[in-house]
Length: 504
Image (cartoon, rainbow, N blue to C red; front, side, top):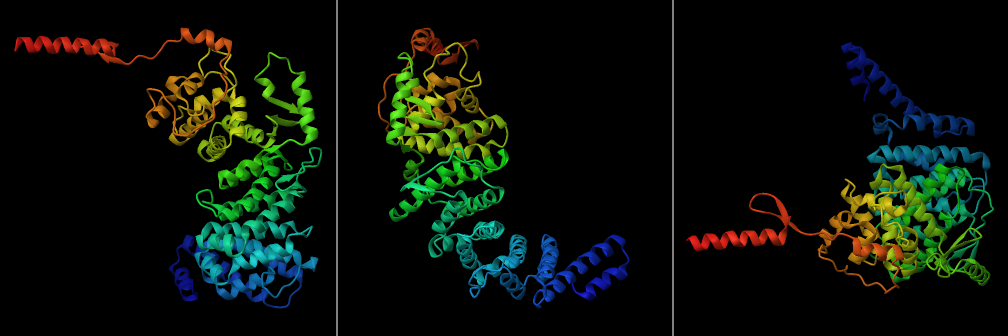
């Protein structure tokens, strides 16, 4: 707003309008004044104070419009050490200025379309990656990394061109994965296996925040990667999946931060090509294999199914494979179900991930079936009644949200190897009817995907109860309007038709 317009409104005399215009006009003038001060050689403490005020003002879009210029953006880039001429981050005294400048840039880019266009012109994404490389192996600069990553996330969210630039030109996939490795202090024991210190301290708040921002940026960079990726990318995706496995097995400073960390890991795993998710499970070491054999021998012989899965030294083992990460995902899914709200945003990503993992990887499917659909012993209660994971998932099969009930039914169907008879055994016909109707399988059969044949898991309780189950019968209306089995109803209509023909 120019001075003449402001004066005109003030002279008009409307109190509310006068207050607004003076506030906006003064804020704009203050912003302009701050930028004029920042180009001068002033003490660091003064720079920080100016930037703190600018950060607060930059939350207002109306204030930003007149001050978002290329010159002003370049002032902030210089203060944030984003110019190529800045070779290192040696002066610790400058760190607060860098952090505040990055915070201002985050607000300005988020709130101003002009700033978003200038970001492309100034090649901001490349400058941010360059700053990240300087920070990669440095301690005590977590705030710089965190807001650098947040700005990268915003840019990749707002511009598809920047996503492509990050992925291919700037090698963002490898760079951001290395940032995660650094945040988690990963020590590799094999190509795709990391050492887990179960007695170690939780992740610090600063490193947790950095990791979350990196996960969000990586999500944007890899979106749609599961649809198409080069074979040469498989190694990098497997490394990333191994880092995410490590992420699932550690905790943050609080329970809420741990959930936020794991939630972003789940979202990112959904972008990983399913063929690369085999690294979520890994074979046991020779020592762990010996321990597992000892544990199996300790179980009673009548616990055949239970002997498949054992817990030894806090490690979930199935069929000679370490299933800790999958077990964490399963627990995460159950917690999201128990929340009872925001299923589409909070639950469907992890359910979709577990479904695709189960469809593509036999050991994961068999482990999840063992956990979710154990041999059926309770044959007296309805499938949706109870507090087990199976009961909770069956209840979701009739949820009002179409997307939620479809993915819940799909997950159970895949665990049953897409066999209708097996699905009905665990869920009941009424709960499964929606999925079966959509698949054209109401009359029975199986889905399109091929699965290996497993041994019969029917329990004695189920075998005894199965002959006593009542089968569903198709029903129809008799001529008098009452319901009867469909065959009888058709017969009655045939008799009426024949009688009518004879009369004619």
